[in-house]
Amino acid sequence: MSQLPTPQALRSGEWMTPRQVSVVTHYALQTLANNRNLGIGLPYVKLLTGRIWYRRADVEALISGAAAA
Image (cartoon, rainbow, N blue to C red):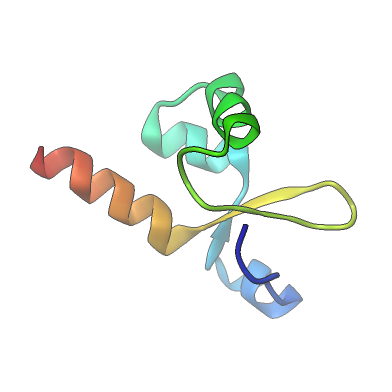
């Protein structure tokens, strides 16, 4: 997990929810959850509320890396 995002960063679009990540990567929500449980895949943060957030830059790097492969 990485550093917690600020409320301003969440509102600015620097961070994405699992549902948003699922839409752009075509990974199922369950796949993202399984990867978190296994400690693999995208870095994420889990807030005290239980909400999961992914950094947009990490998601974009995954997409561009997958496109280059």
